[in-house]
Image (cartoon, rainbow, N blue to C red; front, side, top):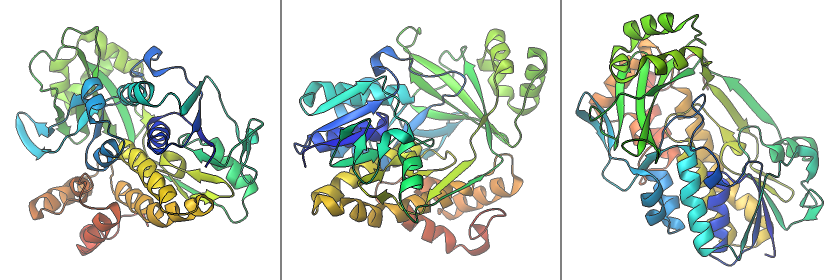
Length: 396
């Protein structure tokens, strides 16, 4: 195959480009942002720590990138609460921000594959720039167009307009995230873990790399709530945290709480499902194909989808690679969407069934991390538990 266009140079897009380059396939990556090295590692208003575990690990190994992730992220050892580890992770894994992931991938691309990966930074591709059937992007013709440009994908919008029978279904859960920086952590928390600070609302803290910080990391806490909270003042935010996440006040300065009080809650409940993952010469990866509420698998699924596409391309004629990819990945994307839809922030029923599932050793949120089990297998196992996981109001 002569040339491939990848729209979106995020984790999924760069993983795909590197995987293709390892087999001698050239790609042009169109990325609307600048070089990862010049961009902030995180946006304090929207970012939260990401843990890459089993499914992401498979993709990292597929492109031989373990050493680069070790260099640019923090090793992940699991989830704990007040020093008690209740979700250990023994395989290689990492925790950090999207910016940390991008630096790891870009360092590998620049070290080994610059002859086959051309990254066009600051190129914002719109739907009317893409001709799905001709394989054209901004006037250039490619053998294949990969849409890896997130939940607002221009490639997906082009497919909706140009591919007969292609549909997109969206829905939303009442899940919101409030982000608080923890700037007084010291040695209270362990950077190698996601640290639980509260159960209802669910509050998880984790690190991103920050070379300017005294410990080389920056701690962020995401608090999951079921309404889009706003605060009239820092005092009101302080009182709310004291009632709901008191440990956070031990770890955050007054300034950090004041900044927290001014941030808007981030909607984390959006779901998006496509009827197909390919059409014409276009293929959708990551959130462009299936966006779902975060349960720690968004980054993992994006990387794995890129790996699955590379395997599909290698297993037969290029013209039918999209169909082979869809056959394998569509059931996985649908299963992960279902698993993520089971999460309801501040829901007593969700807390109860998570505790019951944990006691039974069959919690799908934990099982989804494993590199040895597909998302569709985890979904089937959860549904065997009958009413416990078979149905939740507002889900399929």
